Length: 458
Image 1 (spheres, one colour):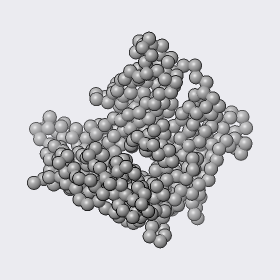
Image 2 (image 1 turned 180 degrees about the vertical axis):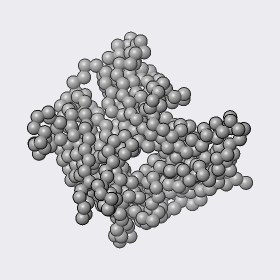
Image 3 (image 1 turned 180 degrees about the horizontal axis):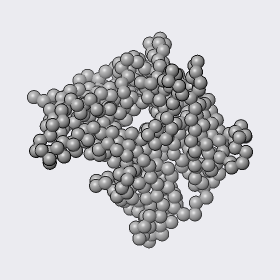
Image 4 (image 1 turned 60 degrees about the vertical axis):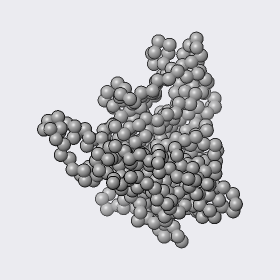
């Protein structure tokens, strides 16, 4: 039967949070505009060091989204993920730290005088991104550090240039075009860009760099989902929705997932809703991708008129890496042909890539009192039938934040075993766990901590 063990040690950081004992930490950004962005290696930019003898550069994925801000400027959010296993760490007291220098600049894409790049710079920033872990040896494939930056800029066409200076070798450079719409001069319906995320929760912490309109949004800069991150969360804003001219003062939103080469909605991955007309409406939700096989997909978002015709739409590509679903499909096809399935379970396990997102911290404070679980929830844990049939057993390690009120937020899998056990552990800790909050100098503080869930057949 499944069960839980004692939570591991945890600490709080400047009112934010950090884990001790499992090695991965979190550093919140300081200020509103300190950061950068790259594009996903699958759909955009990937920094590559030229020359076979060059040292491997850190792998950094960037994405961005734009939103309405005021009549003159638009808001741009830059999302960045750094692959933890590609960083070089140095011992620093009780931590191992890594620093990634970046130089960013946004250039106007004027058709004239393109060589005079200095005159085209509209925004630039140099920053040293610092990351810290307790033990670099515990970092595994799929773990990503996450950052976000916001800036405002006049609508137009731009070129984003990225430079990563490297010691004793040529810098890594990349660039891409960025188009920022004019949301301030709308005479009809419009949709912002879509932010793809791995988690969206309610929040009142306006100091959190991931806070936005009452939500905490953890963007997914590489747009990759699958084992360990099967839920696709999305955020977008709809503007001037009264353009649908309904007598009911409502408009219709249509949001669905399709295959990249076939625009029809995938069964079960479609949401259609009637919504109140507003100057700005927030469209936020989630799709469970656990049944999708590996491949490229598209998230579609549309505003429909009274005749169900699309008035405006947005779309975002994303990819899925899901060996479990691939194996199930192959086994099904083999069964149809030969009457039995013959893919070894250990071979499927070797193909899995766990997707984990973490944050980093370079300074932390150990709480005087750690959060304390109130009661228990062992009766709420259900052994997934898929895991039972496949005889999957083991320990799932869940990382989560206990806030000042003792509620659980932002649960994520650090170590999983698949078969639905990971999702069950997340469900239980999120829906049924209640804690006495952690204390520092007599005051309640949010604490990031971890807890193991054991799933064993008897």
